Image 1 (cartoon, rainbow, N blue to C red):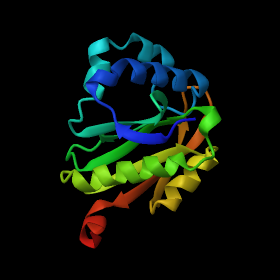
Image 2 (image 1 turned 45 degrees about the vertical axis):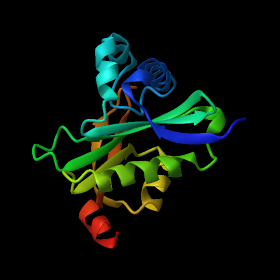
Image 3 (image 1 turned 135 degrees about the vertical axis):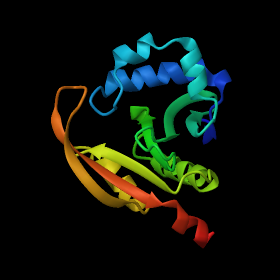
Image 4 (image 1 turned 90 degrees about the vertical axis):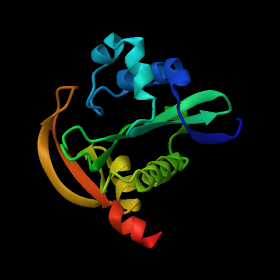
Length: 174
């Protein structure tokens, strides 16, 4: 195994990103908001635009040159003020899980959020049965702000737990 590292993805990475995103959706159809069918239908240009870094950042976790994980932070489309960043898309290949790489994801996305001044808060959520996600969220200082029942893409009806992190407070500490 080569050195495992995290870096921001760019539009030049769109094909490896697309392939791993499709794999994540196929392995865990209920844990993401998007569906495999919708992702497969997405034009190449949309995959490239997702990686342009404009109000968002997608990171890739690499073992040497092999992409083994992805994670993202986007401007929340449900916040008309544009002041909320939202975490999404986290996936690590099964053979690499349980090694602390999720902490790299949180540190990188929080750092991006602190540096992206239009945002005043970061939000993240998970479905009620995703305990590893819950532990990582709480470990990085997020506060539970609510929960609601949701119908997930795999047909299960489970609560979605929602959390936030105050970026203004983090900026004052820095």
